[in-house]
Amino acid sequence: MAGFKTGIVVGGLVVATGALWLIHRIENQPVMFASAYVGIQADYLKVTGSVVGNEAKESDRPLNNGVVMTCWKPDKTCKYSQMNEIGPRHVGDLVEDTLTIRKWDKSELVADSLDISSNFVGCNYYEIRVLFDSKDVSYTRVPNPKADKQRCAELFKDSKPLRQWRIADGKAWSGYVKGED
Image (tube, rainbow, N blue to C red; front, side, top):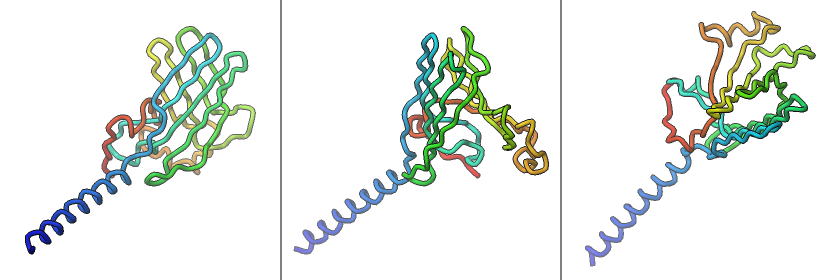
């Protein structure tokens, strides 16, 4: 009878250990946002995916996120929406922006969030470039020429103030490996 009880206890410990391991693994899995997609028509473009980077330091990479961008050539505007993972298995608010199309020709689209007509004084803005042949999408943070240099000094203190990333499959799709800080 003692062997039977020992077997039950050992079996219970194995199951409990496996369950705890699985729970830990699920809790640390990044949120899975939509996979990368670029759809191009004559006067309409749609991009989905995540802003991703491959910097060694985790703090230099974008947060896990999902983006959707739709552009209309006649309006010369793009609607850009982004949602970030703000904690394990938790997402923040949907952030929406209207981008101005600066270029749309047979090879690429270039749109950015810099509103020249307003008194926008943020430290940086972003530019999105879509190469039609390869369907590559770059996302670049650019210093705002109108920004207060002293107020923004911390952001641009290093020798590489530009942050160039891409819109592609996000962390959950790509075998994400946490970087070091």
